[in-house]
Amino acid sequence: MLAAALSTLPEEKTQGGADYLFLMLFEQRQGTLAFIAVAIGVIYGLSLPLADRHALHLVFGIMAALFTLVNANHAGVPFLGHHPKISHNGRNVGVVFAPFWAAATVLNTLGFAAATAVAI
Image (cartoon, rainbow, N blue to C red):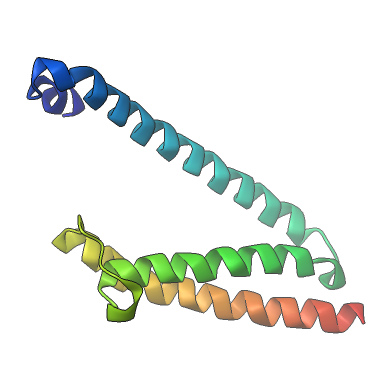
């Protein structure tokens, strides 16, 4: 499919299109590696006492809050701006995942509060 997209470009734009696709796929691979690192951090965090988990909850809570905003933007929440390339299915992904990430934000906030309360 990507090769077909490149083949439709005029000759003078082929290199730019190839570079764009490379960057898109490169960034996607880096994002995947970041999620693997997060999963490893979660597994490690499960072995820690509750009082030592506050840093993990802070990082994961901030990540979840930012993901909530991105998905709410995709869902079409007006005050978050307008994504110019959103598709119908992309909007539906935002509608489903914005509440998921909002719940993750709340749970990590509660976990952070509990871990810091135990540490004090």
